Amino acid sequence: MGSVATKQSCLAANEWICGEYVRSRSQELIDATVQHVWITVASVLIGLVVAFPLALLARRYKHVAGPLLGLTTLLYSIPSLAMFSLLVPWMGLSASVVITGLVLYSLTVLVRNLMAGLESVPEEAREAARGMGYGPARLLFGVELPLAVPALMAGIRIATVSTIAMTTVGGIVGYGGLGNLILEGMDTLFKAQVLSASVLCVALAVVADVALLGLQRLLTPWERAQKRAKTRRWGGGLGRRTAKAGA
Image (tube, rainbow, N blue to C red; front, side, top):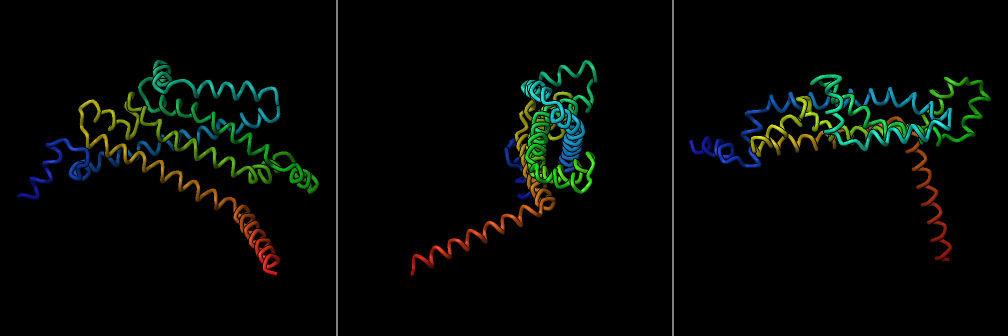
């Protein structure tokens, strides 16, 4: 009886840390987390699909790059509450409002990083590929994009983490994933709900960032080889200098 009273007391006392809340509302937390994840994934994937041709357009027509980057920066500067409110009259109270807003926000990072990644490809690599008979499409997908992966993945990581954070604002239209619980908890001063949903949101961002970093390492094995080669050269040079100093 005493243990039961203790378990119930944290809810009755409206404490910030309450295990009973997590146990009794576990399904609610799972549903909110699933919604948060699918909104984030959909937004980032659609953002990539939109950003890719825009980056190619800006690379092909240099005079387009400045206005395009300026437009994406302008969109990113719009407060999320204002952005969602502007989209509601056109799309209604639906998940498409949140996803559209998040896609527009992600373009700032994704377009810039795609352009930076493509521009970082050595011209020697392009010339070698052309000499082997690579056409424009094969050159792009077979040479340029693989070499642009580090910059592209950096952009995806930033876009994903920021999208996870901004998805919570979607709670104002009922499609904010964990943001729904945070806003509801703030309205009712339900401390355990606010803290639990906030912690899960932070955990999602950390897990997503680590997972994407691992994916980047898998997609760029040559970077690890280059780092090991540099380490060996540095270690060998240090050994030779030490030997000379000892002599």
